[in-house]
Length: 86
Image (cartoon, rainbow, N blue to C red; front, side):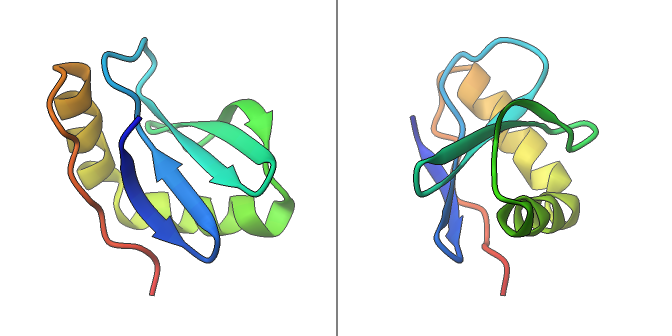
């Protein structure tokens, strides 16, 4: 599961050959959430409110890059790195 970004203790992953809908995994400590790239909704899991807010802010700024990373990973290519929140 390639790491595509890391910021404020949150790690963002995209798995290879994932199922629809397009999504990424956000991990903060013992918490994990699966986030829909299209609407930034939580598909599964849970993050603390502050962490979820940071993840949503990051994803809103970089949605196109995340979708491209998803497409690459879905084709079993390295998704690449995406800049973190400043």
